[in-house]
Length: 168
Picture 1 (tube, rainbow, N blue to C red):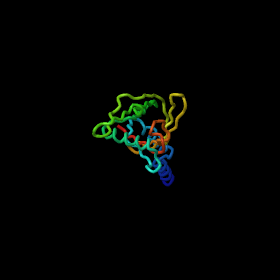
Picture 2 (picture 1 turned 120 degrees about the vertical axis):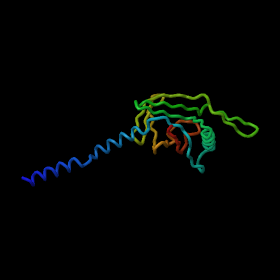
Picture 3 (picture 1 turned 60 degrees about the vertical axis):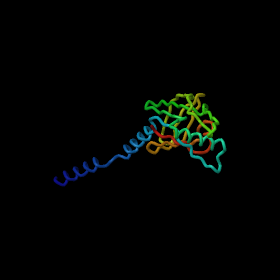
Picture 4 (picture 1 turned 90 degrees about the vertical axis):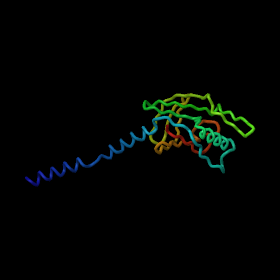
């Protein structure tokens, strides 16, 4: 009888101490799906200088210049309710020639768009203004999000490369 009680107690302790892989997978999926929630500013365009076009190289220089001035021309907002918004000032960039070189003021106008999104930890899927589904490859590491620039439709930022966003 004593052996049976010890056996039952051992089985109960063993069952209670084992974690469920299903719970761990579910928790990881939850963390992945909420990692994108927040406001993200484009801060850098990583390109291959050997293969990038002159337009893309110039776009990178403009982004670097404006980011250094704390001017963010592309901002993405992902909300917990699975709505998203984007602010894109790329079409309103003005390059002015001055006596000391080129000057690029921070654009005051931007194109705004709103959508819903889904995020599976690797891909953000949104609906564009034409009702078409757009899938964008994403990697999030803490407060840094990397998007495949080729998945975007932004002038001078849409060739091969990585667009880097930093969370506010």
